[in-house]
Amino acid sequence: MRKIIATSLACLLCSSAAFGVDAPGFTAGFSRDDAKNVVTDSVYKLMWQDGEEIFKGTYDEAVKYCENLTFAGFEDWRLPTLNELLSITDDTRFEPAINKAFKNIAYETNDKGEKSYDWWSFTKYADDPFDAWLVSFRFGDVSWSDISYRNFVRCVRDY
Image (cartoon, rainbow, N blue to C red; front, side):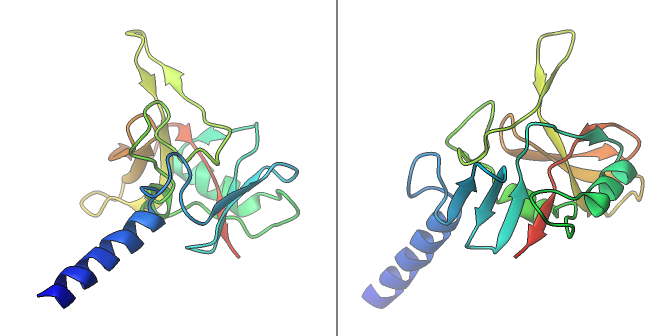
């Protein structure tokens, strides 16, 4: 019984370290390079674009934007998958619910004063080829959107 509890606790600690529960605001393994305006995640071996200029476009424009992006001396950027985008959320934060290593986050305000922090993922919605998954950095939750709508884009690369 002790072995099961110890193993379960170790798994919880590992998942907490990977998703930012261990220290307020910073996920274990995340670091920022202010000179290059990138955030690196040593757990998943990803480098994230985090410049002041934030692109907004349709799904197809987002894919092309990342594929054509030259940023921080690299040309191999891509639109992140849903799981990759979720890995930078921070459930201890609100507006924005994103890891504190990131300095640049965009949002829009609607006519009711509500903020929208919707960012494209590369992952298409399985039931409809005209929808793709989004991550909202308002709460750190997911939804899907028609691919013709315009949402924010944060590119990623493997390193």
